[in-house]
Amino acid sequence: MNKKCYSCKEIKSANDFTKNKYRKDGLYTYCKVCRNIKRKQERSNFLYNPIKQKQYHLKYKFGISLEFYEKLLINQNGVCAICKHINTNKRKLNLAVDHDHITGKIRGLLCDKCNRGLGYFKDNIEYLQSSIFYLNKNKEIGVLKQYEK
Image (cartoon, rainbow, N blue to C red; front, side, top):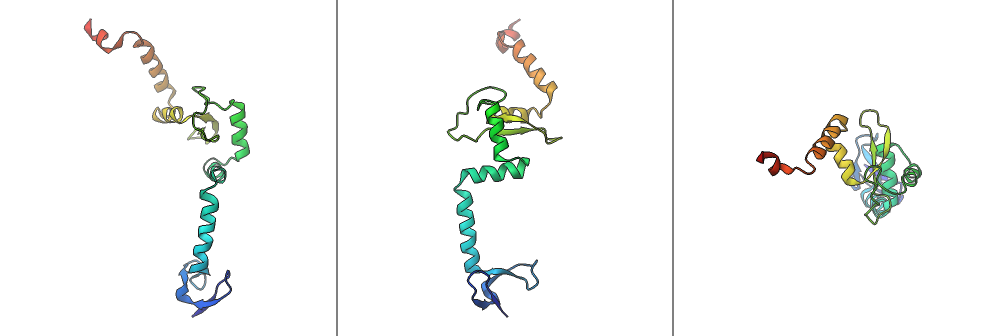
């Protein structure tokens, strides 16, 4: 069986095409050579463009645009919503999008440490309040002095 490649327009043997079970003839529309060229071009356009990567990630994971992300960043003065530290990474768009895992609602932008901290505490307010109480209680005492009594 022979098939015409959509890209190079050459008629080639079926062995020159990769299998595709979703097509009627069971083969991709591009020959292997053209398909590899096309995939390399797509990959290089995407992989080496951090803005395109960020756009894709924001849309895929959170359903928001890069413009919405930048508005959040401006509203937070470019700092983490919790610790207020300036973005230490040289990249402009590296604050994580914080969202409620149950509702999916976006709460703000956080640095990596604050984002992980909320994740480790499972967004549980009681755990966080207990942590604050623990830190305040042991602020000056320390473990050794507490057990010397």
